Length: 229
View (cartoon, rainbow, N blue to C red):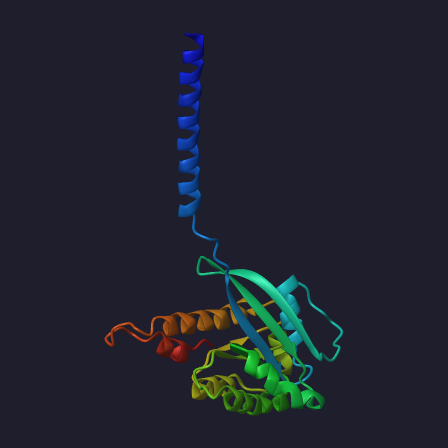
């Protein structure tokens, strides 16, 4: 009798163990693989000395670099939360000097969105944004590419030489947002980067929803028509 009872208990234990193993296996199968945050590739462009590196470092590390050193090309990556969703931003800080103009096309091809920076104290740097814009459009062959015009050094308002109206007029002509920033005081730094990332996100979602019915509003249009002063 003892042996029969032992056998019955062992059989019951094995059956229960198999049930547990089955439940665990089913639970593991039902688990969805963790999705990686969407990656957005941003290229910083603009003349030398306008503060591209200072803006990037302020956004990345909350620090202001006083001494300027000409940049060849530095890459940074950071996770941010955009509209409740975690995304990754890959920032390529390019050189503004003409010495490196020959390799700009390669950088532009790899970019998905562009922060075009000038200094409000240097009209020449503002004029140069026209050339950068034309180069990017030529390489990307797409006027809908996410693009943000950035007037940096807003903390030097007393030395301003680029009229605000001219900045807004150019942004309106290009149908792109315009933001004034200060890498020194951190004013609007996050706003500039997040505005561009939001454009990139909208565009990617719009392309992913290309099969939507024709009466649905176009997100691509929303990207182009978005303006900020």
